Length: 323
Image (cartoon, rainbow, N blue to C red; front, side):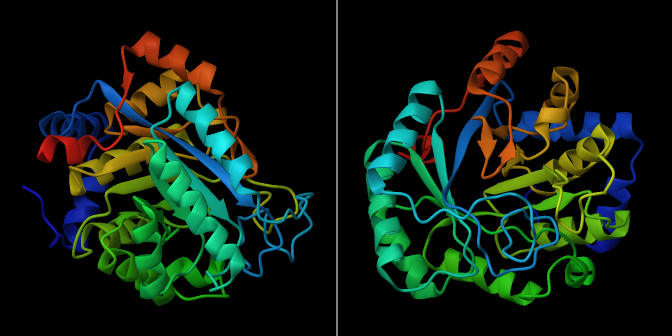
């Protein structure tokens, strides 16, 4: 049963289930609500890189950190559409465009992004954007242009959030998610493991996601990729079992969501990733870069899919099934 009334105690109990039992339970829920033989393949492109005014402690694109990321202006529509075409040919069905902005401003750059959204949508791909904070009016404009999903992660618990970001509040994040919902755009929202948070913080973040009025359609679970020059550059690598635990708990709490195994896959073996798929992950980012950090290539992922007997999920599958 799909629930939005989980208690913290219930989430904690699930999260702390012995690992083998947790994976079995999550796999059972996954099989009940999803096709376990398919994985959504998404591509993420940085359409405007670096120079961001935010102070997210993990992010190499923050202007205040010296990380070696060169500031690049907004890409041209033709360049973006060429990337989207190549991604589609390689097997991606969702194309996400990320801009290193604190918030969307009503200017020519936003008009150009709206044109990009229209162009990618016309190619038959699910279009996603992650552009920072968004007003309800801006969300409606993106929806009218053909936006399918909007990504805006919570990152961590409300309690730990201020240790990672001070330039906007947790409520700002939740307000953007609400604005996206009101515009009829699907929500992509998850978090990052390895920021220095406690297990309690992870439980609270999952509880927040699972008790939203509607579950996010996509829940990215990221492992921190420490970048030199950021405040978290010396954080320890995330253990695969921590990722499995997060993915399995998310799958049980939000049975129909696409749970995305996101950042950090380059340090995972195929066996590690297989455990994550068994625990309920059914979405990945493919392509050599996630904004500015490394990621496995399309070829590596397709070889893994072939080995595991997985196939890419088709675009707009939910909508086609409703017809």
